[in-house]
Image 1 (cartoon, rainbow, N blue to C red):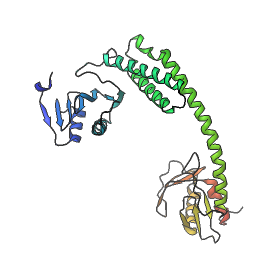
Image 2: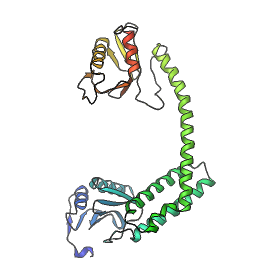
Image 3: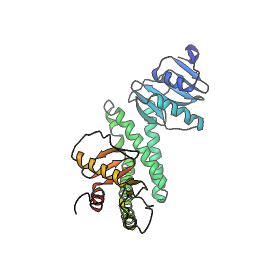
Image 4: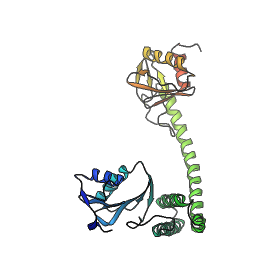
Amino acid sequence: MRNQDRHTRNYRDQHSCAHAWAHQSTECGNASNFFFEGATIYSYGRHFPIATIDGDRVFFTTRNYSVSTSAHKGLARSAVSDKEIIYVHFLPVSDEKITPESPFIKRNIDFWIDNIASETKNFLENPKKKLLLKCIDEQFCLLHSLVRTFSAQAPQEFSTVLENSVLKQAAELITSQRTLKEISDRKRNAARLVTFEKSVLEWENGIISTLKTLHPTDPNLTYLRLDTGKAHIETSKGIKVPIQQARDFWMYICQVMGTTGMRHTFRILNFQVQEITPEFIRVGCHTIPILQINKIARQAGWISS
């Protein structure tokens, strides 16, 4: 059915238009350069469909056109956030019945396989182009998602798509590169940890006034030190807590330790206590190991050494 045979409603803003499309409350809707016809919503014209609703799922294009089209895509995505979103490059044609045999599915599969083959070849010839790996991985994930969506109802040949030799080569490449990256990250983090621990020791002993470096794998990990006059406790994030408030908090920790699933109402300064476990406490953006708490408790004389 052509648009002129349908009733089109004009919406006062694009947000309202997107939600009308999401709920399919009218056959057609329009808001400036953003409109829908039936299940499909468009940006600027029929040459750029953004997404198509198919029951509880939505096929959403990965293509981009302009900054304003990106904004249109954001509005459409927000309007269907309660549905399963399946990202594709090519959308089904208007009013096409969507099945595993739909032409747009094979078109997407062929498009991704060709792209993955080309980018894999390019990377093997230019291994310093790490951005290619990200593109290969993203398209591989999109292809997997599309195949999974239809695997239960698809013909036998459809379920063997991922057995393609090109895809197997790409999968092996991604796996091997991830392994190399993990090894490299572990080595780099180990070196950073040595530097970090040296800085922590200097900070705890007052050699440096501020701990500027963060833990290499957990930036929220927080350390504590007691000032020489025992008037306050300072966190490595620069928060100073008067000693009496710190002691009240320590007593609260001792009281609730071992209690699971507890909703904490205790606040220290302006920070809400979020979690207390035998290993750590979380207060605001601070993750403080219990070992640090016990160290301060001994230094302050709250518990015997």
